[in-house]
Image (cartoon, rainbow, N blue to C red; front, side, top):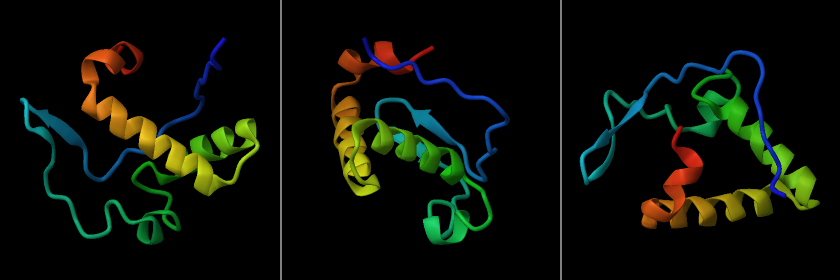
Length: 94
């Protein structure tokens, strides 16, 4: 059985929120140079980097691998979910 991941507490409100652009991907309006920068966001606790770091840590710990392995595994999974949204949508749509 797959793990069930839940969250508690208040999630960070990102400085920039994406939105679906019908059939052509995702758009981020008014995105600055540091909005998706770990170097800029982690020390300030912004833009969902804290939550993402926690998830990567959970994944790495559960699999007994380094954070780099967990990140690369996650990147491959997310890339395939993006390529095959009809197969993956049942998992990430609420």
